[in-house]
Length: 316
Ligand code: UDP
Ligand code: MG
View 1 (tube, rainbow, N blue to C red):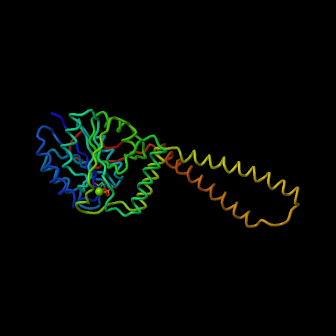
View 2 (view 1 turned 60 degrees about the vertical axis):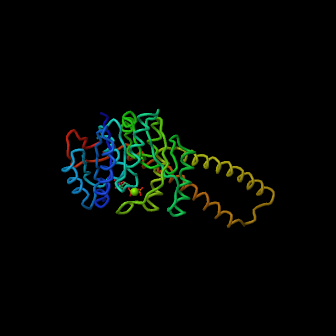
View 3 (view 1 turned 135 degrees about the vertical axis):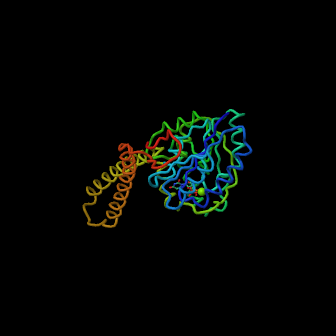
């Protein structure tokens, strides 16, 4: 019998988790030919999520939970899930039912019958999203796909079912700055995309706002592309060429026309412009440097302070 692990990162999901559990057990009941385990990750919630998990685990022995010593973020929670998942197939699902469990049977069927290593989901459209956010999201996907070697689908969710080989590849990618949408694409393997209509959260609220999304997208670009560094150096080269031409112009003007004292406006413009470009390029280098700094520290991605079950990887 094949086993399937469903990884569920939870941060303040005391309201959603019981609803999620009901929905999943309903789906699982229709799949008796698989042993399906729930791997709940409590990402340092401040509410009663951990108590809910303990309760579920005491009732149902297919439920395993891992509880972080503090909030490490969804990426760390997913990584802890991948490191501890034992299933032949592994999926990540949000606790808020935005990843409908009803898709699971179809996903399993595709992995069993077709030549794919993973089945991934993406939202079919961006309905119900603020237009500004849609605009930036589209721009982000266009840019990152052009400049990086990870192929990232617009509207991709983290909800996907993968075979063991792909999970092992993801676990082997031990980088500290994790951007899963990129990691899933980077490891390759044959992926089938299932578009579906976006669903609203079952309960509770999203942890994202505009700025955290912007930061997330910059992290994604820095993690999977060196293009900004190249752009910074091209800009340097271009400024140097322009500067050289300007030096010639100034030099010959001086020889031909003498030196009338004028040009305050143009000098100030040039200083401000070059200053801006320099600061921006330093900022780009700084972004990469700060990521490199964090990578070289080799800090653990997560620390688990409580769990049920044995053989748990507690720190990695
Ligand atoms: N999550 C987490 N740690 C965090 C933030 C979120 O484990 O620091 C979980 C959250 O509990 C949920 C999933 O990640 O199960 C997605 O979060 P959310 O619904 O806020 O994001 P969205 O669906 O809006 O992208
Ligand atoms: Mg959500």
